[in-house]
Length: 170
Image: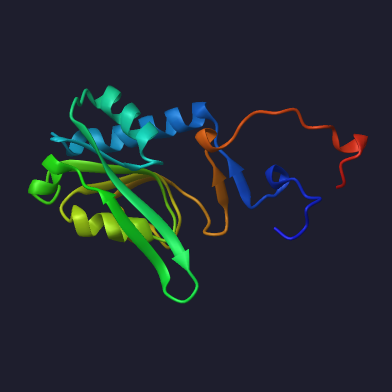
């Protein structure tokens, strides 16, 4: 944003998701995934997939969890790129067949394309999906507009904000 006087949480292009919403929406994801099982296990795409993976594991009574660690970055000259930092050993053996790979959000799909190269046969699930990324996931709960930024509770903190009438610029 170019105007520093606008609170990013007052911008309609931003969506703040609470812990309660993440928990509720991930349970909706569970309801979609349960009939598709049985599942061998869950792979959380770090870091955003860690919280949904914990909820999925509890609600689906799955005890086998692993992580796929990918760092995604954007370079102006090269486009989007990813670096695979860690692969899930057991799930990787059979390309992820019978495994759920979960993330909080698919945006442009850069990370999901990298994940698909590691686990081509896994079932890709996200809680939230943007239009550019939806073709790369098998199951998701909510589609959000491409230009909306989602603030997850693990990326934010509560703090006092002065009322607008008390000096904040509108």
